[in-house]
Every structure is written in structure tokens, then in C-alpha cells.
Length: 377
Image (cartoon, rainbow, N blue to C red; front, top):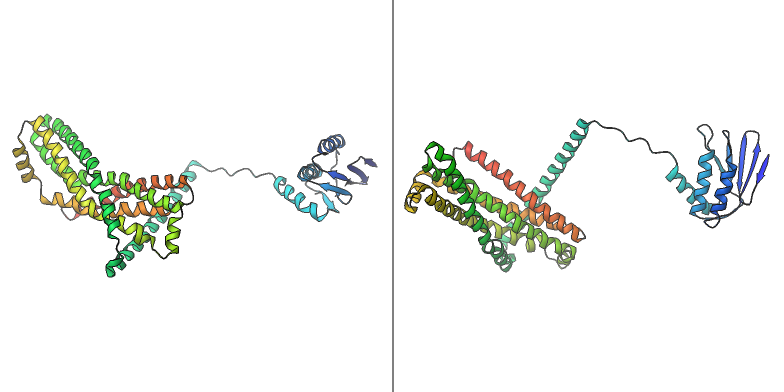
């Protein structure tokens, strides 16, 4: 039994259905071909053959119609046999068959516990990789600093002084203002709570210990991370986008020596100085509030502070300062060097520099607190 049209000729021999394709299977003819295919609708469950040998031209739309026919004839027991396909048509047909062949398997369902475990594991691995990369970058910066010590002429003093001004001198207003206000808040809240027990005088103890040991340096580090760490990442990231760092390497300059080392040393020097300034401004704010709320003189406040606050409370904060400074500079510079190709990457890495810097500052501060508590300081 045979049925014919301009594009499709079907012949049945026993259980075998042979479909011979002819003419041009292109987008110009696809509507008429589709109507013919809809009229044929062969209800066939046995073997089938599609013969391409008489076919003329074929484009993607025509190949899609062929794939539609093949899928209609394919059964689990009898896949469709292809015959006489021309080499220039074969790749197109095979690719469309690959795209529309087997239906996608239903995605595997996971329990909430397994999803949480998977995300936790992935985050842990990412954090370990991040820590390893940062440690490697610290080693690279340390080696570069050692090379500069051996050959001092390599050190870029102008860049160092410029960045020292930017991260130190220019940060004094914001650090001073916030430290002063934090001192006011601590003194007011401390006095308000201690007044209930008739122990207002211990506000000086609270103020001195909290500002000198923790609040002064921690607040300074957070401000510097948001101000200078983000600036380092944005500056170096913009240079990366503009391919200036690649140009440096091309002419034989080391980006670590030129860009990272001056910034790192500037923060190493500036952070202890900013910490001392933050301590003084915090104590000044606390003293002002204590004088107003506790009705004591400035002389009484300073005498009480000297009697109850040990000198180690001051040095604990100062010891942390250079560590925080180096960490903020390393994170900012490293995130800037990781920028790739676009302004969006600059913004993303700058934000990441601030977040990672503040996170590491708090972690390191916690480690210092545990250590000083263990040694009795």
C-alpha cells in the first residue's frame, strides 16, 4: 500500500513502514509539510524506515519536521531506521535528535537535612580554600617585603607616604567622631545601669577597660576596613580592568612590590596611631558624659582611671592594631587583584573585601581575647 505527496511517500511492506522524503524541506514549505504530516498520522507500532535519498535542500526547520516524524514513529521495541541521508544533512538531523531525544529524567529529590549538609560542606570547603589563598598571598607579600629589606632602594617611599596620609591622617575625623560618640554612649548606658546598685563610680572602670582593650581598636579596624580596605580593592580592581597590572608585568614591575607592599606598610604604621587616637577620643567622650551624669570633675575622672585601669589594658589594644592593619590591607589588595574584566566585578570584589576584612578582624579579636585571658592579661 502506497500513499504519495510532493514531499512524503509512504509504503507499507508487511509490518514495515517506509517513508521516503523528497523535495525541499525548508522554512518556505514547512507549513504545507506540517499539514501533510498531520493528515498522514500513521498509527504504526512496527518497524519504520525513513529514506532521505531523494530529498533536496534542508534547513533547521525542515530537520525539525523530520525529527517530529521520527519521534512519532519511534516505539520502545522498534527504533526508526534512517537510510540514504546526505552528509550535509546528517549533522543537522543528529543534533536536533540529540536535543529532543530522551526526555529529561525527573530530578532527584533531596531531604532538607541533606541539602543543609551539602551547603554546609560546600561553604566549609570554600572557606578553607579562601583561607589557603589568603595565607599564600601573605607569604608572597612577606617574601616581597624581605626582598625590599635586602635591597632598600626597591622600596617606594613616595607611594608609602601617600597611602599613609590616605589611611591615617585623612581617617582621623571619622575615627575621632565615632570613638567620641561611642564613649558617650558607653558612659551614659553604664552609669544608667550601675546607678540602680549605687555603683556609679564603677562607670570609669567600665569605660576604661572596654575602650582601651576592645572598643577603641575594634571600632577603628571596622572603620578602616570599610574605608581603606574597600578603597584598596577598588583601586587595584580598576587597574586590573584597565589592564594596567598586565602592563606592569610586561615592563618587569612586580605588582606586589608596587601596589601591595606600600599599602600594607602604610596600614601597619597607621593602625596603632589610629588606635591611640580612638582611645583618647573615646575616653574624652566618656569623661564628658561622666562629668555631666555623675557630677565628678575631670581631675577625679583621670585619677580614678589611672587607679583602676592597668597599663596592660592599653597595650592589649595596641598589640592587636598592626595585625588588624596587615590583614585589612592583604584582603583589600587580594580582592582587587581577583577582579576580572568588568565594572561589576570591581563592585563585587570591593564589597567582598569589606565583608571578609570585618569578619577576619572579629575572628582575630576573639582569638586575641582568648589568648590574653589564658595568659592572665
